[in-house]
Amino acid sequence: MQKQLLPFYHHLIIIIFTFFTLQIEAEPLKEQLFTEQKDQQILPLKNICSGSPWANIVWIHVHDDEETAREVALQTLSHLQQGCLLDLQHGGSRDIYVQNADISYHFDPNRIFTQQGRQEAIKCDDGDCRLAMPELTQAVEQLISQYLQYAQLIVAVHNNHAHGLSILHYANGSAGANDTLQTAINPQQNPHNFFLVTSRQAYEFLSKRGFNVILQDNDQVQDDGSLSVWAAHKKIDYINIEAERGHNANQVEMLHAVWAYMQTYYLK
Ligand SMILES: [Zn+2]
Image: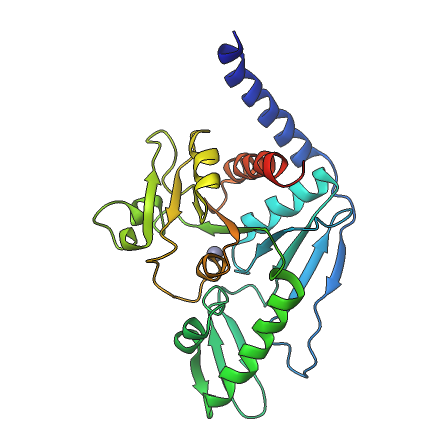
């Protein structure tokens, strides 16, 4: 009996959750401007909170052009009346562009969390960009010490597009397979909607609920400076929600599963 009721119950929760997420007017969210001791704000970060922050959990949005991910995360926080989203806001582009008196350069903000990643990520546009590395390193270290180093769970929200990244990129024989320990693919799910996680605990929890999930190989993964690699080095539980742009309902459903995971393992 319980087994028969579960799918209905699950759907009912999602419908109610989606309704409230879409219908309830957003509560005012507190924005704390992230400040750096420099003229140039290299990582223009806002910590947007609804109610009180979680002590050990960080939600983060790094690609400013991935609007669905930001919108759904903020709506969800507003509904939950707790938690914060660390949001990089840098003019609506994927890359962050830095320009000062001496140099100009740009980088992908999800390739800067390790030294090796930063070295490869910095793309020089003008001037002597040797100066870029120390100032970017300082900004990243400040971000980490202020927000990430004591996190037990980091949830990153991303979007891809119909012809972009999908879980098939990580399947056997594909480019990302070497970085992957295990992959759960549900053929009934859109391959663009998937989780990438660093813990078997999260892998089991999410794959059992019918989602596409990739378990990163934390020992073999290529150091590209992404947050998942940094989290693996620090042994932090990390969940990346990848959903296709504009698929708000899917992203709501995925965040709802993460909320259930948070309640099971972190907010008891
Ligand atoms: Zn992204």
